[in-house]
Picture (cartoon, rainbow, N blue to C red):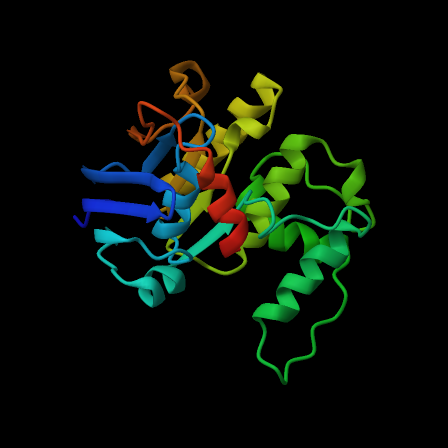
Length: 234
């Protein structure tokens, strides 16, 4: 079975020093949690795994794929501020319709999504969680529902690997655990799942039915320029 991640001396450097790495590991579990303090480079590492950021050295394979194009083609991302941030002043239906139109062939007519179409599109992410109505404004959504929406939009791309940044940005721990459990169900369906968090809290993953592996990227001295680099590149 192909490992979800295989890192060989993978590293990213910037003008002011190391952002992350070098890292060496093999991740055979279908669910990986990249951990590190703010500025540790975990978001940049996830973007590398998604083919959105080029490493300075080393190699990284994800589900056997290597290189920016191959990594990008098989992955979808959610939860990345400044990349897939939702427009607060639009409805859920508008957000789903826009993603469907983006994914459709140029000649296809994609009608505005109603409640039935929204449920059909988002149920792979929400599962048994309540799915907001098409006319719900995004600014009215709770943190966990908003993240599940972003995950749902990402899954509309039909990825082999789902990459979610900042799972702990859902501050209510019960809600966070519920989202994590749902991600575990997505991983059990055959889609590789990578998330980031400041720390790995085993209790939050108690509802996950597949093996989960922590991938620490923290450095002894956090690199505050990692966020600056991210802002420059996205």
